[in-house]
Length: 153
Image (cartoon, rainbow, N blue to C red):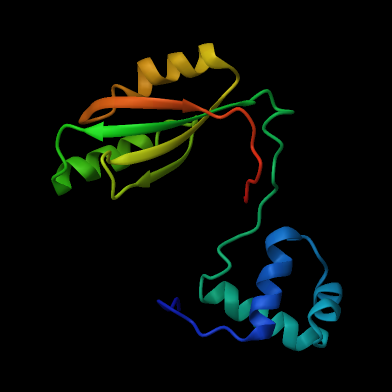
């Protein structure tokens, strides 16, 4: 059963630190690295999974090698910010596969999107055909990333 907040001790934090970069590590190696035996380490992992602190495991893909090197950040201003409009935008933005991240902001704009495409032409098409036509979008401003100095997946 998931909990809202869980107190984490140094072993829990160590498990999370290791798994966040090495999700395929064996239980034996994980236990060795954090200073516990295998059974208690596995029990802690299971507890962290059940508490939904660990929400899953996945492969981390290299978007550049996949032909998706162009990254743009898009400020989105909505024409209406009542709850129904926000929910409509939230639902619709989930359907745009090029949008990697979407954050509601406390700012002079309403949302910040991270959009990944093959190139500027593909980005222009996504902006014009998909992002600009999302519900309640009044305006957008684009910032093109030149280099990723740090990305956490």
